[in-house]
Image (cartoon, rainbow, N blue to C red):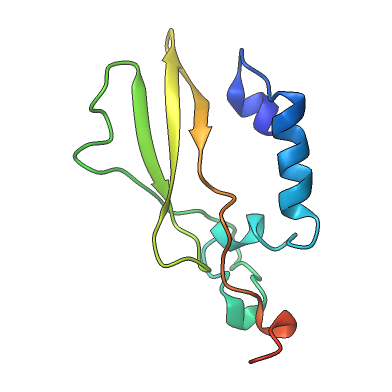
Length: 111
């Protein structure tokens, strides 16, 4: 899916390996971006599925680029993604969605 979102610039072999490494024992990370998914419910999203994406006054500061912020139920701060415009389409240019988040309750030995 990320290759589709990246448009004319697919992920490099290094980036693909990075994704594999990030998700090896943390398959719950992508689910944390769905509304209602929090550590207490093991990142089980609400139905219907939705994601909260925000802009700021600085989101369109540079021509041809847009920075958006995606909420994660396992992080204290929203995570950013940067889009780049090509013609009338926007493609994923840079993402900071794979940083560590809180452990799900069922995997947390301290919970």
